[in-house]
Length: 257
Ligand SMILES: C[S@@+](CC[C@H](N)C(=O)[O-])C[C@H]1O[C@@H](n2cnc3c(N)ncnc32)[C@H](O)[C@@H]1O
Image (cartoon, rainbow, N blue to C red; front, side):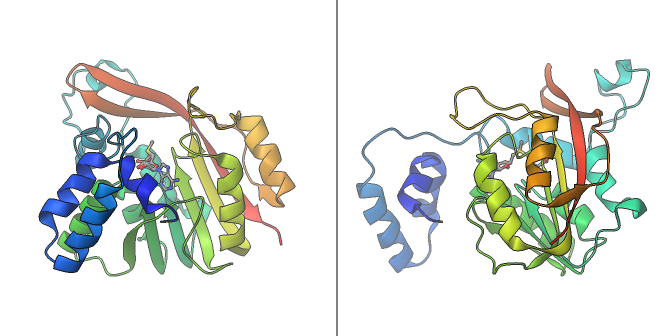
């Protein structure tokens, strides 16, 4: 993490739990001294435990009952985990060492691990990575690892990955930085999969892009795009009475050089 102080300020409740729960006196003392430096604005990121979107991702991962109130109203069946399952499509032909960017609790990483030799799931949320690792140990999966890391500052050596996927992430961060970081990590002829609703926030200060603009940027970085713009339904339950519904675009791109 490039800036630990900033990272702690963005997840202050999680940070407090690290202090309370740390077993090593050295780590406890380090965290306390970092805590003492915190003065200004703090908050708890929505993807950390107790955050509004934390529980929703757990629900999605565990699947919805067949009599779910909203889903049973639709004529066409919509499966909340459909977009994750698409990663194992034969036609995609993903292989080698992979990276899943902004993996949350690993729904897409577990799918990728069925096709890839080894896959790393990375996310800024400490709580998601903790949960993903628990599931990984429970399922006794060996060809994967989950790491807290910033997608715009990846901790891997250059040209390391044959396959990189980012689902519902590019509208959550600075895409200009992300594409540089992805580009230096992907091998020649590597595959990049981007799935996104392009729901860019108004107030995070990052540039916003639509499907055409994202494709143009990828072409500028010498990716060959293999498919047309798509509208794939993706649904997530927030609580008993509210859902998020998106049509996501699916980009399959190959790095040319
Ligand atoms: C909308 S969620 C998508 C989660 C998952 N890919 C999925 O589709 O189920 C966005 C995720 O990106 C993570 N994230 C946001 N900025 C990030 C960054 N700079 N580096 C790594 N992960 C990031 C968030 O913590 C969150 O888990």
